Image (cartoon, rainbow, N blue to C red; front, top):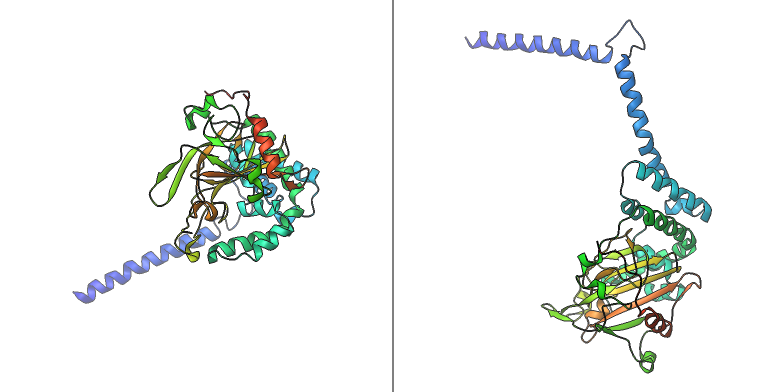
Length: 358
């Protein structure tokens, strides 16, 4: 009985093998005596599929044309044309304009490398007194500086073109969704009464090309964390960098001063907004959280996030309760001095045209 069962199994296996061989031969040459046989329905389907894939192929080709390496030999006019083609193709494919803009913007480290000068770059490359992850982060930024500084005009052409598209097709988040009392904003970096400027006489002991703005109504949370009032944008523009997730313990030890996240180890959570109208970059550092994302359109007065004390400098003992503001003037190729920043803030403290809250 066992022998008969084995024979039956071998027989079934042989039949299955023969059928499989026949099926395979048909798959290899289904029409051995006829060449070029394609059913009309199949032909139409193939042509339709190819036609639908062309915009997608163009999309990726246009995106590749805006790669950093390929931009080195491109003029500003060529870059603008490539951006228009890329975004137009993306919109035709049903993509969100903000997502398309974000695809064109490099990392936060690249943006910082584009704005610093050779002196900053040298300082970054030789930085000391911080953790190894912080050193590596700053050394990477320093290494990117020569290339990114040489491509600033090309990247600003990208930002300008993306901003023009966003103004036409982008969306503005209603301010009151982010801060219920946003309608009270009358210029400056917070609602009235929630910040104060340093005295001119104290500027000699602070940053020359930045401004630390003191915040009121700061909440103190567990873990030496501070949450200040909501920070508002000083300008219209496009978000070119927005980072959260800063982790560090500078009060514990140098080795733990920075572990990960944020826009840079010392700056903490932060946002950089480029204003094509003003040709300026506005940087807001040491934030608690961030309400905006890279590639997003913002308007003057828009809530950006809460002030905080993220970043090595702000998390140190006595280093919080302020917003670190920097403004890079792209026309002049340098950061504004602290006295210029105070003048800018004072000029902004007035009623601005309100963006609809609905």
